[in-house]
Length: 239
Image 1 (cartoon, rainbow, N blue to C red):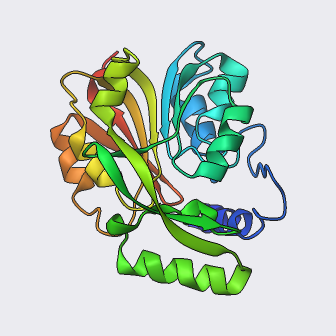
Image 2: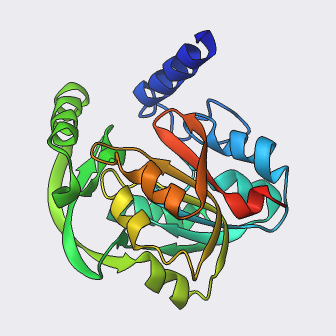
């Protein structure tokens, strides 16, 4: 219990001070906010070389990134997706992988994106997917830390169309952090067509059915770290 409390405290502290240091690494040399990349590497991938990642909600590609360690140190390739225009500009500079400026959603087309500038900018997302409690949190943090918000139109693409465009069928590591529509993305994936080993997904309000859904898709919950749930494909566990 003490270890869990300590981890929660570390995650909260790192979130509080994220605006004062550009690339905070509470679990250096790893980059995830609460050690998600450290856990999956040391317990599952074991320094596997040349894997494939997909990071949906990649921000600037380094700050609290779940995929950057694998690209930087292990030669992995993949796709980083980020709709925030300012952070996408940073993402393109920071990463060598394919970078896509879009939202991943369950449908293609344009949608309203709440773009936050300032300390709580990582709470940006599709405004019509927000839980009211998430919206209230944004307002509280803007009042406390400063910043601004505005609604803009962004392009949305489905996970399946994105994988087809880049000819990807096997994914070692899928990370999803979109501040509200994670479950919509999960439910839209064609799991018969795309093999995914590990899914790390942020659990937001209203995602109570995710465990049950992923169990039906042959995934098992293996770890909870911070606000993220880590699932593994049962077929990979048999190897």
